[in-house]
Amino acid sequence: MARMGRPGMSDEMKADLWRRWRAGESISVISRQIGKPPGSVFTVLKHHGGIAPEPRKARVGSLTMGEREEISRRLCAGESYRAIAGLLRRAVSTISREVSNNGGRDVYRAIAAQERALDRARRPKQCLLARRPALRQTVLTLLKEEWSPEQIVGHLRLHHGDDPAMEISHETIYRSVYTTRWKVVPRELCKRLRTGRPIRKNKRHTVKGQWRSQIVDARPIEERPKAAGDRSEFGHLEGDLVIGSNNSQVATLVDRKSRFLTVVKLASRHTTVVVPALTQTYERMDPRLRSTLTWDRGMELAAHKRFTDDTGVDVFFAAPRSPWQRGTNENTNKLLRQYLPKGTNLSTFSQDDLDAIAAKLNNRPRKCLGFRTPAESVALTG
Image (cartoon, rainbow, N blue to C red; front, top):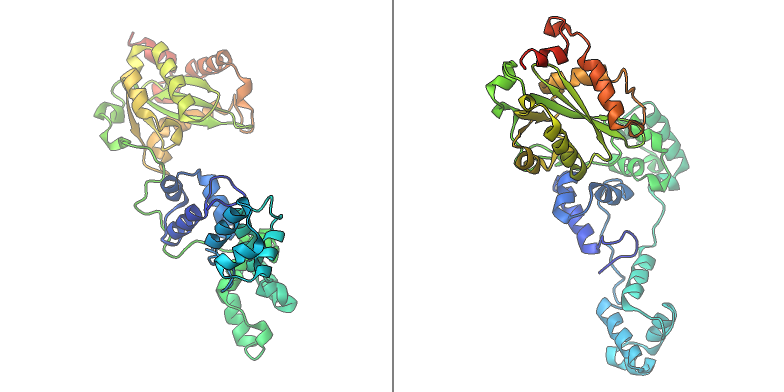
């Protein structure tokens, strides 16, 4: 049954989301399994602080979804409340009140009526800390001192064990901290906890064994040709994105042997934009620089197989969180920051501007090249 609110996130889908979250799956894995963006998954989790809510259920004896559908059909057929009540074996007043509370005969809809009934049945009460101001103040004071919820509970039991008004569990504190919409614990106190997480994680939650980057058929850097590792040949490039303000970015390609740099203007960091831009760049590139490409685990190169098909260049991927495996590119990007400082809107630079910046670096002597320039190193083999 569809819910009002975020489109496409049905009750069944949310139930599957929470089941997977309790089983310890990561947000990216859940996203792939239910076919929704990671941001949508996080939004659902964050609304409840990462703690699965109790399933909604109506009071015993209340109208069921099936009965509401029957009411809707009978109303469309023009039947009276008395006739409908007799068919469902319900009081006439029950049918009359149900229809009146949901817009009347002309607008009654079973799904909307069921939603309203479940919302009314929820009758949320204030959480424990909201109902006990003295306990709340004590908990807030200790959270500011960077105590964990378990330490706070232990302290309260030791010093206030005979006071029922000061009783609380550590899970109740966690729920109050992470469910920020309750506004019981200030949002900034989440960061005072040791992990600094924005939502509660299940104890079985782990990303071990989960390939979170979603890059299919990625070839690891260990399979890269020996010549790429020992820098004995030209043409083995390392690449990455340099990020600017306002969601702007450029791609950098650096030859491992000569340190020759190419900077590519990008309208987006999505793989459908990055791969065609890199393909066009390689078509204009010196053939001696077109052997292999090593990239990090960024999703901008998820369509790497298309890139290889179009250019004939094999792509290899560094291990996650291992920038030193692409040290040539990382060091060159630091040099590039002299011309493209952090916080710069890179979309304001044309390709000609970027080519001019690359030319400056390619004509700057490098100690690692015996004080030759990258341009000279490439020219020497021409």
